[in-house]
Length: 82
Image (cartoon, rainbow, N blue to C red; front, side, top):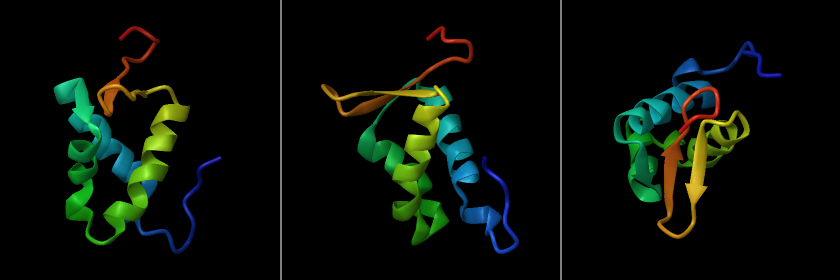
């Protein structure tokens, strides 16, 4: 379960980073790995640390699909239709 903790910084948590990545993916539908990673650059030094856990979270909840041939992520619509 994902629950906020007393000392959780809401500006640099996985849920906020996921929101930013989903916004970018909704606009572009398909985004290369490096371009998507740079979407979090304004979070400061925590951006690199947050990127992979955020992508893992989005994959687990069925929002992204990774394409290894193009090294890119695809946004998946709610309900399974892409």
